[in-house]
Image 1 (spheres, rainbow, N blue to C red):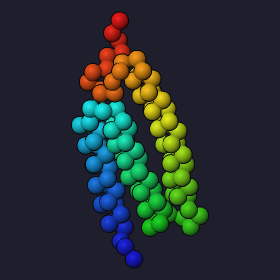
Image 2: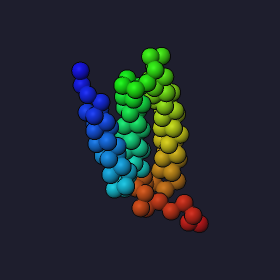
Image 3: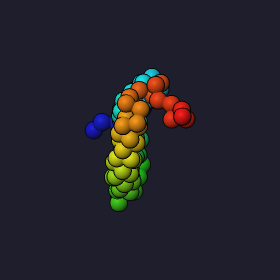
Image 4: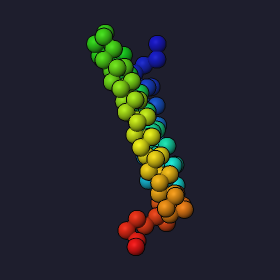
Length: 102
């Protein structure tokens, strides 16, 4: 059996990769993908703590599935905003987007 610490280390590494990507990317789609990585790291934590510390009813796994559904909805909204901004500004680079410009 794989110990709990291995899962937590994996989750921390994935979260740090997502955080680094969200802070350093200039592309809006890359930032959305990095945020999804961070959400997946949180889901790994939920499932890990449910397996090793949780109740036998699988509440952590239910929360993880609920979070996956919420992340999918947030991704749809985020991509819709990116497409809308691209149609107006003709770019998806965060540095070049100025929504307050007249």
